[in-house]
Amino acid sequence: MKRVLIANRGEIAARILRACRAARLEAVAVYSTADRDSPYLAQADRAVCIGPPPAAQSYLLADALLAAALGTGCDAVHPGYGFMAENAGFARRCAEHGLTFIGPSPEAMELMGDKIAGRAAAIANGVPVVPGSDASIDDVDAAKRQAAEIGYPLLLKASAGGGGRGMRVVNEPSELESRLSAAGAEAEAAFSDSRIYMERYFPQVHHVEVQVFGDRHGNHVHLGERDCSAQRRHQKLVEESPSPVLAPALRDEICEAAVRLARGVAYENAGTVEFIYDPAGERCYFIEMNTRIQVEHPVTEMVTGTDLVREQLRIAAGEPLSFAAQSVAHRGHAIEWRINAEDPERGFLPTPGRLIRWSSPSEGPDVRVDTFVREGQTVTPYYDSMLAKLVVRGGSRAEALERSAAALDAFEVEGVSTTIGFQRAMIDHPDFVEGRVHTRWIEERLADTVP
Figure: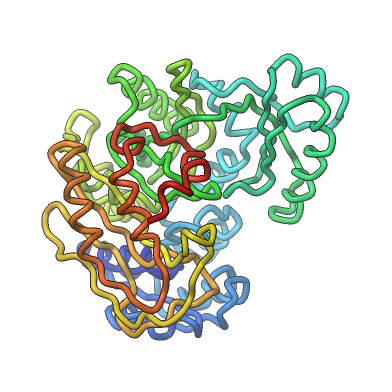
C-alpha cells in the first residue's frame, strides 16, 4: 500500500488523513461541491471533486469513488464510517479493480450486516442473545404465538436495519399486526429489505460495545468496552470507557464473547460487537456487530494508547496485529462528547448555518478535539450534523468528568446552535454522575436537562 483514497468526508476523513501521514502513506481526499471549503482537503496529496451535494450523487456513488481512486493511482480505499463503509458490493468492486478495501471481507459484512444471520452466528459461537425469533416473521398468526412465548413488550427490528429505522415497540398482542406492517414498510423503504424479526424489549437498558480486531494471520483480540447509553433518536451523543455499570466479571465475559464471535466468523480488521445490559437481570445480550471503525473509536484510543486507524492500515497491508490482548493496558477513564450542530430545545433538530465563531479547547495528553471545521465555514444541511468530537481522559471517571466540564466550558461557538450546553448540563445531573443513564434517558429527562 502506497496511496489511499479516503472515501468519506468530515471529521473521519481528517482522522484517516492523519493516520495515513503517520504511516507515511499518500492520501487522496474526495469532496462534494458542498464540501469544497473543508480545511483538511489542503492537507491531502490530492483532492478530487466527486459530485454535487446530495450523498446519492457523490459520497454514495461507487462509480465516482472508484474513478477517483483509479484516476489518482490509489491502491487502497478507506471507507471510514457511514456511507460505503458496510457496503459489501462496493468492497467487491474495489477488489475487482485491484484496490485494497480497508475493512473486513465482503462476506463478513454480509453475514454480520444481516441482523438475523448475525444473531445466528452469535448463537453458534456461544454468545448470549436477547430472547427472540431466529428467523424473519412471515406469518402474523405464527408471530403471535411466538410473541406469547417470548413475552411482551417486544421490539420489532429490521434485519437489514440501523439507526432506528424499521423498529417498533409492541406493548401488547393487539398492537402486533399493525406495527409489524409499519416496521416492514419502513424497512423496505430504507433498505429495500422488508424482513422483520422480534426480540424481547427491555425498557431501560445500557448500550455496551466491545472493540475487536482481527488479522489475516488468525489473530483476534479485544480492546475493552465502551458505554454508549446516552442517545437521542437511537443516535449516540456521549460514549465512555470503561462502562460505569459493568462488574469486572461481566466485562470479562462480554469481551471474551466478542473475541469468540470475531474468531468464529474469521473476522479481519476493526469491528464492534454490540450488547445491551439489563441492570434488572444483571445480564448482557448481543444485539449486532458493526463491521467498520466507529465514531467513538477515540475513546478506546485514549484509554489504551493505541492508534486504531493506523492498525486498520497495517492489517489491510497484510501485517499481523501490532499487539496481543495481554499487552493492551487500560489507563484511567475516557469520555467522548459528540459536538453536533443541533438544538436540544427543539428536539435536537439540525441547525445548519455559518460558523461565525469557532474556538475549541486547548489540546493536550488528556484532551483531544477531532474536527473538520473552522471559523467562517458553512455547516451544510446535506450530511450528519456532527462538528467535532471532544475526548477527555482522567485517572478516574470523576476526574474525566471534571476535565470534560472545563473543556466544554472552553468552547466558543456562534452562528449555529450546538449540543454543548446540553452536554455540560448532563455532567451536573445526578443520574449521569452516578451512571444511571440508559438508552431512553435523554428522551425521558430532556425537560429537566436542557439548560
